Length: 449
Image (cartoon, rainbow, N blue to C red; front, side, top):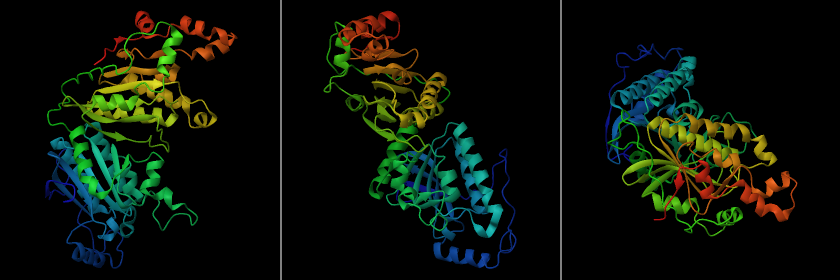
């Protein structure tokens, strides 16, 4: 805990505050609820070895100037396993976080549920899952740091349920522990790096960078002046960074938007934010390098962002964007989306990965967001794949962009026109920024710096 916190005070609360459900467990009988011979002796040895009374220590801590509730596992205490008294501590800590309106930071190192307590230990996962859900409903951030190992129920509750999931390099991460996996299992799939590649965690952070990374996340997600009782102000519109002046023709708009040297998402994010941290993956097994999602600071405010990078957006990209929008909505943080894609990926792999459902999920996330969403079309606006990240009532466009129901080449092909008529088709589609403004599709054209 000292490695990440500026200061901390261990909490001695082990009972659930009045008004909260699930009372603490009663005093345990000798050798625990199962009468497991030698269990008391094993716990005594663990106490002597670690100086701790249980496998988890809870504390009120300051991280980057922000107060939080920290849950830190001691793996040397019976493998960081979760038992009934562990559950009591975790329930009390989550309740304390709700009472004080604080985020929860979990430093996890556990092999799972404690076998010496049987089903009484396993049911602690239900208690923990409920507490996590209650804090989520209260709009309180949860950040997990996965240490080695993070397996079993600890991963499936405290870890995988967190809003932001960080992991130390080389950590074992997975529901199945090392002794219960199939003999031919690929160890990479159960590593921090493997889980990052599969879209299950947001970042692998070296130990010497963990403190600073946590401080930035606390700064972004827990601004001291934020009040959920006040409506969030919309994210300010970014300036247009590309070529000024509007295109003369529809095909001219397409050519400008497809120009390799025009500013892309990275240029806009760099110009807009003073600092930022990104999330990664859809938590369903996929990632899309063609989309950037996260939180940043702009003129002293936290703004969430989802930015397409000019490539065809894959299902994992839409799901990651939807995850970002819903998290920002729950935390009361306004959203900025940068729209730039020739369209949704349409290959067989994308279809098998649920392209339609993923796009529908992105539409739903935008449609139901209570925080304001500001969208800027910075390049290609290819059909529904672009529209899925465009705010219905707060969409602007840069001069070097276009938005079309379908690419002009494809429209000409569908209409059985020859290639010589592609330029005419582009004009007929009315896809230039000024056309979009006249049609009422966009709110305005973004000015230059």
